Image 1: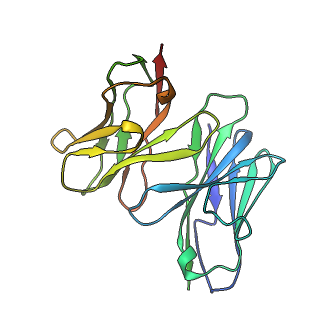
Image 2: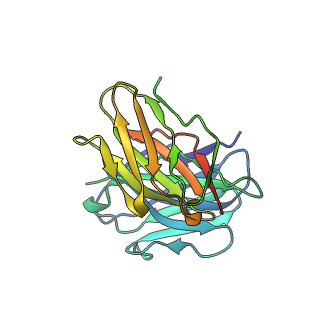
Length: 116
Length: 110
């Protein structure tokens, strides 16, 4: 149990377009989901914390209007990279915490975004 | 298969005592090695990383980690534990992507 999926796993887009990444908890309800960004061989950087039914809490330095996060249900959170540029190319990872469960974070496999 | 092991689900340490959180890995090549910490109701935060060079790496909040190539270990240490160190700690080797350990819950007791 406790599987988190992300879709798509890989996306290539043109500069200026928007890209939506989905994060789903497949077999549990997740009240909290986290979005991370990782550059090659670099550490994971927390972008935002997403609670179901409320606005996401963004980390300092993360542009809210550029990285739109929606957590509309207990099993789905989406990250939309708006007007993507090459510098947004990165590996995006989500994770989810089980509602009412132990403080364990389950990670999705990640989405590699390449902006041309 | 590539894997990382954090053999202890939970570590209990008295405040002021030294602490060690263990991590061993089985990964091909020469991975970068990371430690992350998760405080209650927060996302993961980066603690430290080893890339190359000195086997002892110093990181945030007074933590350090020692890389041992022959034992493929990267144990996290701190000379004197604080109550605020109570959290969940993840070891993660990284080649093209992070490989996550299961995490170790560190409990610091007064």
